[in-house]
Amino acid sequence: MGTLDTSLFSPDLVFFDIEATDSIDFFGKLHDRLAPKGYLKDTWLDAIRTRETNYPTGLELENISVAIPHVEPENIEKPYIAVAKPVRPVAFQPMAAMVDHPVQAQLVINLGLLAHDEDQVAVLQTLMNVFMDKAACEDILAQTTGEGMVNTIVKRCNEVA
Image (cartoon, rainbow, N blue to C red; front, side, top):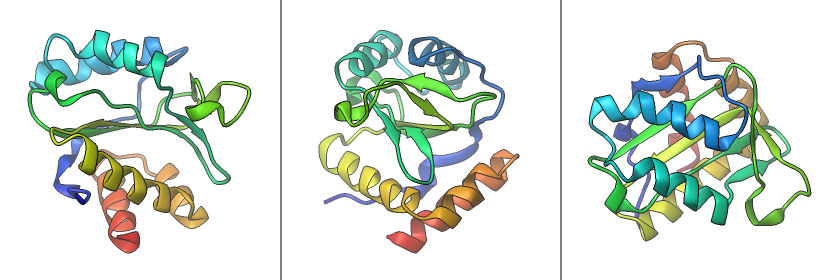
């Protein structure tokens, strides 16, 4: 099984100023941030919107509400993990119909991985372990800089790995 490559986190891929009404709106705004940096193929925006419609990624957990969207590797130019702490929570449909209402995501972690199946599982498992820890969630949500967010997430991921 793969592992979480924490080098994919980067301060220039952390966004605190995205305002969006829902996941579709959010993806358009994230696309506008990531595309100029060379991470995305032209197919990314349609692919991630379609995947999110078919396989929603909103998770309403005890300590935090998050979304962890991703697309198939053929829509990615180079691997990345983008983190957004939007101005206001963004409505995402719940993963596997775990709840009967939209999840108001306080944090969105967009995975752009080239090795899909195995790496995806390892990354999701690591992140879920982090999000089960109340102190880790409080620490992550308290961050206000890209460097602080990356350092905190990497530290917390290493603690549960």
